[in-house]
Length: 355
Ligand SMILES: *Cc1c(COP(=O)(O)O)cnc(C)c1O
Image (cartoon, rainbow, N blue to C red; front, side, top):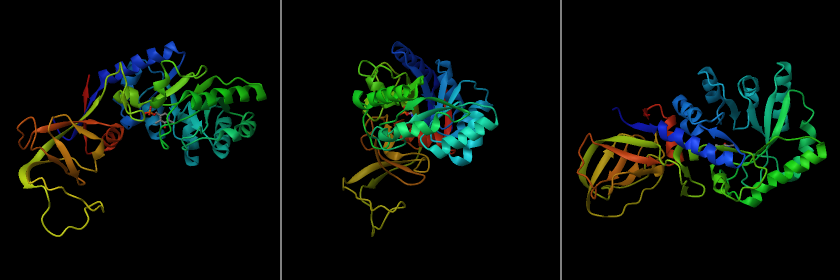
């Protein structure tokens, strides 16, 4: 097997999708399966569909176009706010997009109307995380501007927490969305079919605290990895760590733990610090910062510690390794969301699929 490689457990991802759909169904929630963490990987997206996902979310238009060209006919939801330069292709390939800017919605409307198409939109509301969204106090005025636009189907409100500001989802900040929906429906005498309550972080409310009325969640991390990094938990009942990195040892030697010579800055402009632990056994792996987010790796072999990395090398202290290691051995690592994203995006990393 060529390395570095990510081993992707498609069966476990499929099971996660199907288990989460069951949990959502019990609450009358439609699940949008978010595949963006796998960087447009078609086989991963197919595992979502095999698990029962009928609505696929991705933040990159390019991935959505690729899925369409591969024959996916599920609903496609564009998660990142559309760029003005992408409007034509958004209307052509996307069913629902998340929006927050009038100028963008008007451009979508013109393009959809011209092509006799309907563009579904979810209007994002910022309930405190300070990423995308209209502020609640501006929402009614904003709505007045968009409800009569031709070619646009106003599906409902959405929100996103736990991404930029690290704001945790609660019954209170999620309920804002339900109340705002009611306000809009009353004032403009219309019905908004969707209330899109959040992402993986919000699944923590699924068992009891999720407000009545929320009927859509957009979930990626939970299905891909069975984890919820915002709430720092493994999600019970799901398969965990379905992406594993394997990388090969290219050097293993006993060396001092403190560098010799006058030290400046490392290749990334940082001033490294070292603790003198005497002579240690160090291994170098053929994988580096170009491929992976190093602090998102957890070695699976006991006694192995990551001590640093350069662009192309991962440095380990293996003095206390549970196994005797040699050049050519492969070491495995669990990945957090960021490490998975980077590895899946790197064209230098092989992908192996476990069915
Ligand atoms: C990435 C993203 C999601 C999914 O987030 P997870 O934490 O992976 O579940 C949902 N909504 C939006 C707008 C996103 O950008």
